[in-house]
Image 1 (cartoon, rainbow, N blue to C red):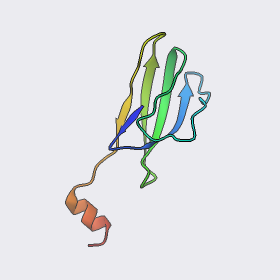
Image 2: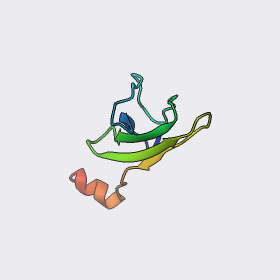
Image 3: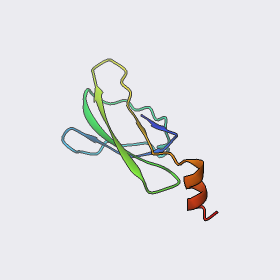
Length: 84
């Protein structure tokens, strides 16, 4: 699981919406070993409360990847948010 520029994995739910156990360090990139199936991933940007969601499909015996991107700020937006 990856997030751009980076993030922390808030939760991973299986197709039945049951939570998957996660390690203490949930910083991306995060590698998990999961049974085959479909998963819903929620990621949080560590410097804000913004979240993004991603979908992952895991096939038996294969490596799967999913990623999500957080909106980025332009230099002008950053300065405005910083009150400059």
